[in-house]
Length: 90
Length: 444
Image 1 (tube, each protein chain N blue to C red):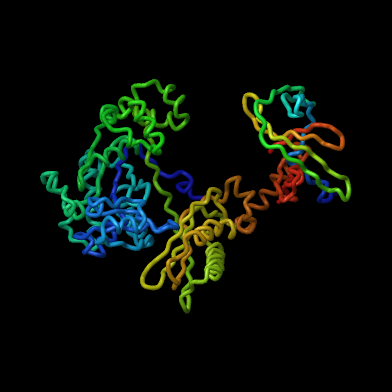
Image 2: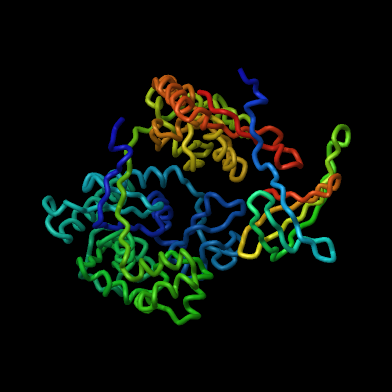
C-alpha cells in the first residue's frame, strides 16, 4: 500500500541541459542532456535569482528566460551550488 | 439520456431577424415620449456611465454610443436618458424567440435583438422563401405589437411607401423596425438582413450568394477596427475584391481570421443555424424582508440560491453551462448578470465565480428586493469531463461512480499501472516551479 507522498509526481520537473555561454555569461545555445537535441538562443528575456530553503538544503539558482531560434520560450537556470544547467517551462 | 440535448437540430437555410436598438425600442414601447424626443439608453455593464444605444433624433444632433453622459448632454441638453433594464429586454427577447419557435423549431439567438431561424424543410408548410419570410415577419409583428403594447399599425409592413418617407428621424423610430434576411448560411442571411428596409425582407436566392456578396462592403465581416483600416488601406472595400485575391494572400496578412473572412466573402462557408437545446431552466429565488444593498449579503444569498438550485432533482446528472442572476431593485429597476461557463460545472463556487465578479464590477444600482438565480443551459453529465468534475455527488446519484471505479480498475489491470491522474496544487505559491503542482493517481 502506497502512501500519499509516493503517489505524487511533481509536474514541471527541470531537465538537465548543457549550455553554451557568451562572454557575458548568457546562454547562446543549449543541448538537451537526454535527447542530445541542440537549440540556439534567439533572445534573452528576464534574468532573476532564486535563493531558498537556506535552513535545510540551500537552493540557489540564476534563472534566465530565453526564446529559442524557431520559437519556444523556456527558463534556463544555473544551479549555483553545483554549476549545472537545467531547463524548465516558465 | 435525451439525444436531442447532445445533438441540437441544424439548418443550412437561414433567416436572420434583426431588430436594431432593441433595448431602446423596448423602452420606447414603455415610454411613448421617446418617440418624439431624443433619447439614449445607458450601458448596463460599464463602470463609467456611458451611452449604449442612441435614438435617431439624438444621433442627428451628434450623440454617439460610447459617449459619456456629460458629452451626450453637452451635445443635446434635451436628451432623455434611460436607465437600462436588462431583465425586461431579456424577457422581451425571450418572447420574440418563442414567437420564432412557433414558425420553426430551429432558432438560434445571436445577440440581443438578433436571432437566426433555420428554414430547412419549411417549404411544405409555408411555400417558398417568400412564404417562409412572411410567416416569420407575421410572427415578429404579432409578438412585438402584443408584448410591447404598441399599436399594430406601427408594425404594418408598407413596402410601397417611399423610402424617403420612412427616413425621417421621427418615423424611423416608429415604423416597423425589424429587418429580415434569407439566405444560405448565417452570414448571407445576416448581410441580407442589413440590406433589408425596415419592416421588410431581403431574399438571396439559392446559387446567387456569390453575386450578392461580391457587391457588399467589407464592413459586414466580423472585423475589428484595425483590420477594417488595414483592408481599406489595401484598397479592399467590397467582399468581391477581397474574394478575388488568393486565399493564401489574405491568410498571410491576417492569419486565421483572414481565412475566415475570405471564406465568408467568397461564399465558401455557410454556417448552419444551430437550434437551441431547450432545457427546462431551474430557478431559485429569495425575497428579502427589507431591501439589501450590502454586497457581502448579496454574495451570500447568491451562493445559497445556487446551492438550492443545484439540489433540484432535475439537475441530477447535468452540469450547469449557463447561469444568470437577476435582481429586482427598489423603484422598479432591475439588474442582470449572466454567464456561460467555459467548463460546465455542478460546483457552487465555480458557478458563482463569474456572477460574483460581475457583482463586484457592476453592482446593482439600488437595494435589492428580490434575487433570482436561474440555470438556463446544461451540459450532459455523462461525458468524460463529468467524471473529473467536482460533482461526485451527482455522479454518484446517477449511479455512474461505480461504473467509473470499475473502468479505472480495468485500465490499471490492463496497463499494469495507473494511467489516470488528478493535478493537485501542492505549493502553488512556491518560487520553485516544480514544487507547485503534482499528479496524483485518480481513484474515484
